[in-house]
Length: 523
Image (cartoon, rainbow, N blue to C red; front, side, top):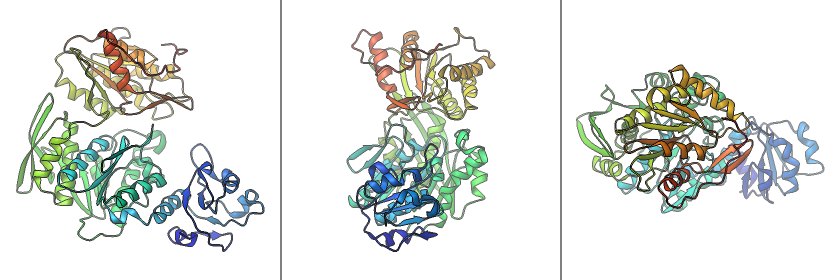
């Protein structure tokens, strides 16, 4: 595709020369540049892409997009006649250029975006399962993986929404393989960083908005404004034939519901439990391994059965039902079938069973709200004690650390505080902050909580103290395949660690994950 075709969607403020080279790829990493690449220089949190222009040119870039005026980057061009295109926002240009090169794949798909603090991955999987039950060829992109037909692709170690180029590649592959619908987990970071700017959404779904990512967004209002960008896109993108543009909001999450409702430029359907919402759950019955409820939508009523426990998972189901029934007019029998057939989502209340007489679960709960909801839910299905293992990430929302400690001290019987991606922060200091929250609720170190810096040892300790009927929870890592110390990602899997701890206790072979660099940290 000629450069001029790509530039038709980014509205450049200036172009250094009039050549019109053929572009074969759009990249933001100079190491990935090949002859024919359009290199997009953008300023990130850690580095400035403009400083890598000379490297991109050395590797054969045919054109460069950036935000700085040409006279401020010309030293990196030297004698090169490669065009430099100045734009107001490089990250947005990256997204739209990648989409244009791929011939706007989202325009050939019914695009469903799911955002919120907690429950995004589960809700996406439920919607996808319903679509598949209805015979719809649907793709799925979440923080866990991407599903395209029979293929499943890993979306990375600590990835939220994939980067703009990878995302457009996945959408194009869906179109090429005959998909008609796509369900995407959309994060606040992905919205603010324009990774999804060129995704022309038809339905936007909100699970909830609670305290999280304030290290990045600054305030709760800024965080909610970031989430609202998804709903703005639905209201402003090109209409597709026979598609009902729709916003799906959680009626029970009053603050975010009111905040977003007043900003909507499209149709609204809301959902809730025993509420005045359009889509509501009644007659709720929860037991171990089985949750049942009735769904009321206008004059229609039908029953739902799912293996997913907890009130929060009923909300996730309702969000998927509102999307399917109100947004896509899917028959209730397929909604029932899709929800009932979904038995497992990696890292979401994932049971680890090696024949032990206590329950062991790995879950992604890493926010105050998600930890509280999880502990309340498992209390209803646990006859013994709840023993929970968790930490808090470094260089992230500091305020939640003590808060999560208090929640655990209140709702669990024993808390094991450990590592969770400390990055360049002091792991000892992070654990102390969590412990302070335990102590605020009357927790006593050594009696109701302890600090064990090595996560494998922490899980082993929790498993070792469990007796018949207890529940051991490892929270915060779930499906993730690495843990960050300093700037290095070390291989890690909570599920492997949990299984190995149980196997070791039972005298079976135990293959622990590689040792993490926590031996020098004092508990």
